Image (cartoon, rainbow, N blue to C red):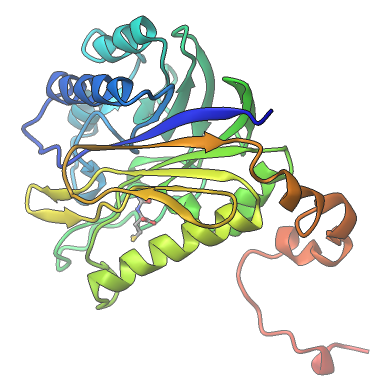
Length: 315
Ligand code: CDT
């Protein structure tokens, strides 16, 4: 008999600078209750879900940034209601937040919380997009390289609610290597929260094209790694800056099972057949039978592309 899990993506509309963690938590609890009403057992919330997407702002007072946007404990008194309600309802969840460690390291992090309220796993974002320096002429900033360190926990999976589940965060979804490392550890579900500006900071690009890339990446990553993929947005106009929605649950077939319709608080749900990919894993994507890592060495040895034509190699 196939294993099924009812998974929800609980998308958040905008959280403005003026919205504190208590406001965010109330909305998260409402989404959780709505997901529970739909039958959800596992709920995926967005990246940096307790605050506005603060890396869009250049801020110099780090103590104030820490106070307003970073969590030194999870849960904290303000965020506790989400954890209490989830435990009461017997729901497991993924949530992203800005982590401040006791020795003052800062990460863009996510946790996996079991239906019994225990924290099962933690991930710290590896692929930090954007820049570290102030761009005063830009309409907005993308300062993840200023506010966060590169995650130091690697890409891991956990036994979770009868499945094998891995976590990624936002920009990681653009890097096939991240998914493959999870798939090589048996990932059956990948949970990922995101905040993606509709406007490209670096060069002009139609917003529809950005959504197109988001969707084709999600479909390709799920299929090529034979895994369920749940991607949840924080979206809408946050303090005037738009981020797109299009939260999705993608099947291991590469098909979009369900997709959000708004750029507001919205829950989508799918009853995921966790064993759906069994045939795919035995055949086309039978890694043990078909992968050739001896030919993939450049993947780990080289970071940037270098033009190295075979006919110009030194003899
Ligand atoms: N949050 C996050 O990682 N957002 C990035 C924006 C990239 S443009 C600088 C993303 O990949 O969606």
